[in-house]
Image 1 (cartoon, helix red, strand yellow):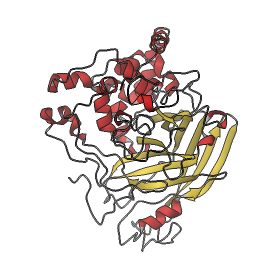
Image 2 (cartoon, rainbow, N blue to C red):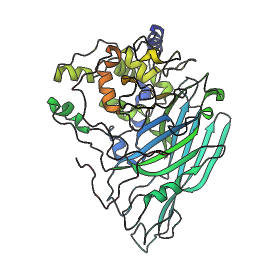
Image 3 (tube, one colour):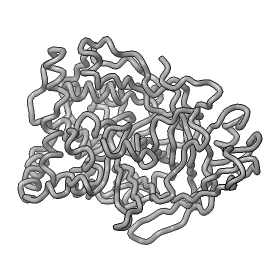
Image 4 (cartoon, helix red, strand yellow):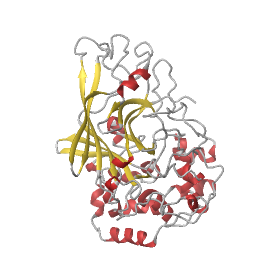
Length: 461
């Protein structure tokens, strides 16, 4: 497969960068922190505001709708009582959508939380008996939330005073978490659903990649590093027309999706976390920029030379060449610009030839290069999904959005090694973790149920 980028796009990036002499001012570390699975120094100390993964896909059981999921608070060990895992009541959590290509949010779903804590000075317990429903009096600590939809036309409150699904304390405390999950799925006015609560962490990968890329000889592979850990999930499933520009999915099928967190500070609300494509901050952005990168709004990405350079001249291919002798593709990496900054235009390779539209997920309108997850909502769900997504000819998979079962670590390693332009995969370049340890659900929110303290499998092989 060959991914091509129009020369004007690259030139435009260079012009935007050259015209912004003071652009590094955007990267002051004091403006915020970064996000994902502990990949930035500052956010590691504020896990409730650490967004770890974003998923965006056409709903397989309801193909006229799109499912958007964001996960926060990584590595939740099921035995983490007595307080377990909570949303930050001083923060605003967002899933944001750009539908006109300018990298600014046209639609934002905003969640805010408040505590409903009845423990006081009487007990340390999270619950004082079996919990069989969200409003069970035995559940002594709850969090309630408000969900709003924000557009240029105004703000609409979709859900008010709803109860988020609690942490899965254990079988004696919560005999059937599935019942609580179902109760926590709320219908939205005008169609659609939302969920707020705990889930099994859907990401699957071997994080020993950071031990000099799997031990220096690809021996440290095959262990799902997040197996058994839980995550906090916010999500919506809404009609695709509610997300498309002017409601026209046929003419305007591409959306950009990312999550952010705005946290209250003495200076007001400040963006402290942002996430679009997986693993960008871990393996693309260098250490000195990690804390500042996610304080940027996406529409300013192209104004920062240091950010653009890390895409056009990435570090990982150089490491793969030095350690494993896998020749690094020539730079500048215009294929990676398409994957991470602009969306992918229709190419001439055998995979892209199956696409009927002019692009895979590159917005046809006025485009502002920016790092975000892009989804073409007009491509129907795959009948036979492939974990390698677009690289394997499955156009409904990553990097066209991201499904739960997409093996994004293998996909990105292969793309960084040049597979997107050569059309050839490097056989040994894999972490050998090809699927989640738990099966995903067939209906919204699709995430597997969280593990509980009855079986401690966190981090197990």
